Image (tube, rainbow, N blue to C red; front, top):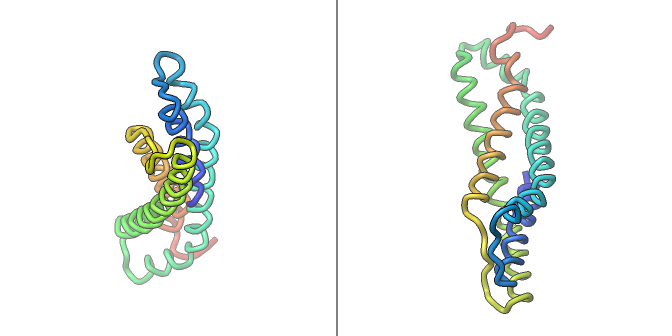
Length: 153
């Protein structure tokens, strides 16, 4: 989940560089920053999906056991969602902290100002994409265990 730091660093670095140079992007130049962040975002989505799916896939026996003792599929879905949200949230906070520390140092060295500029909508979009990716990976990996047969095939 710490790959959020990579995407945040790219996202904030573009904004920091623009702010240091006094540049305001307009027109097609606005999309140039997003194109730089795009590959990092794709990598982040793939890694979040992979990490969540692998973690939840290892827990299929536990989920089947919970179903055997009476847990309903809806309860298991809620459990998987909450666990995924907690892990994704912690990963996002750690990744943001790493990115903020490195970019604060970069900004201080480049301009002498103690804090860096960033785009809240872009950051919120990145966090949303990571959260949705984590939920999709967790729910897809446990679908069969939550709704399928109680005994493994």
